[in-house]
Image (cartoon, rainbow, N blue to C red; front, side):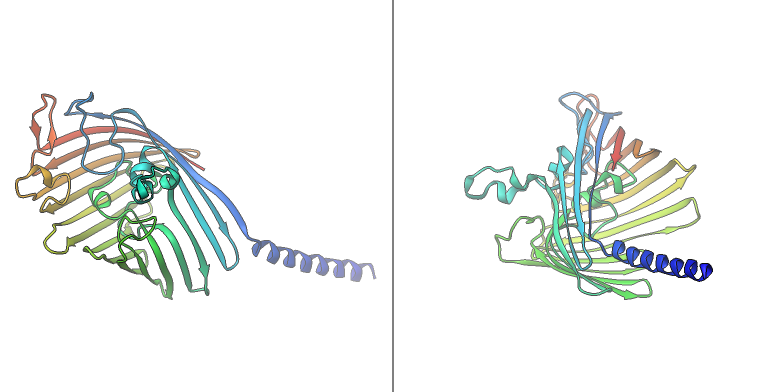
Amino acid sequence: MKKIITLSMFFIACTCSLFAQEEEDSTPSFTISGSVDAYYRANLTAPNDENAIAPGSSFAQLPGFALGMANVVFSYEGEKAGFVADLVFGPRGTDAIFASPMYSSRNDVISSTGNIVNQLYAYWNVSESVTLTMGNFNTFLGYEVISPTANFNYSTSYLFSYGPFSHTGLKADIALGDDFSLMLGVMNDTDLTEFNPTGDYAFGAQLGYAGQYLNFLLDPSFTEIDYTGGFDLSDDFFLGINAAYLTVEDDGGSFAGAALYPQLATSDSFTIGLRGEYFTETDFFGAIGASDADGDASVFALTLTGSLAIDNLTVKPEIRLDSASEEAFIDNDLAGSKSLGSFVLAAIYSF
């Protein structure tokens, strides 16, 4: 009898445990995460005073000891729906969201209300294979992202800097099975992330297979195609790849480029990686082309980065060499130069 009672109690305990586990698994969760980063930057071949110059890409451009950003992400995940509120504070955050220019200048009223929003969206898991997202979300194009925690190199590429950062609209993420995925979206014009003052819309699509992504963006003013992917060539060696081409309507210029990201883990806490990028532009599309009479220019950039993990802190020393077809930089004598060498030491804490 004692054995029967003991066995019965065991089954009851297991049943209660299973129900408790199911209830725990289905309980909505609220999380807070983010990062803080700062860095030191010095030119090796150019001045580091009021004449300091930086590569023509985004972020990590300030001389001496400088601030990146504080990033705080609030997220709520329910059984069927949830939201993400991604807030940024600091120079990197301001550059990433363009200081929210549409709302800040509306009706000549200066406001900082929108200046902290990096992403703000809600989503609905329609089924196990379909998720609808509406709001402001970071771009699906490119290998690199705004947050320094998700990039291997601390400074960013020309491809990332010239492409869209974020979109506001409605997208559908669809899992097609067997490693295939599809994303379809309708969004405001690129960089109009607060509201739509034009009445025009952009359309985006992404086809994914086993970590390789082919991306399309059809904007009212330009068309862009982008490939992003990578391969684990061994347990310790990874090769990332990015290539893109953008053309502006009515001969408004274009850019094209490709970048390789080989990364070798030498220990559990240290990885070394190289970004080799070639980037070209036409018709004064950006900063490099502005140095040429016809607005046509190219640049080849090599960035060697070490990444040392110390608990939640990552320290990244980085040497970068930019070589342009035009005199897009200056040397220590303030004369025009086609090349620029620089050093960055970054500290990134994530939580």
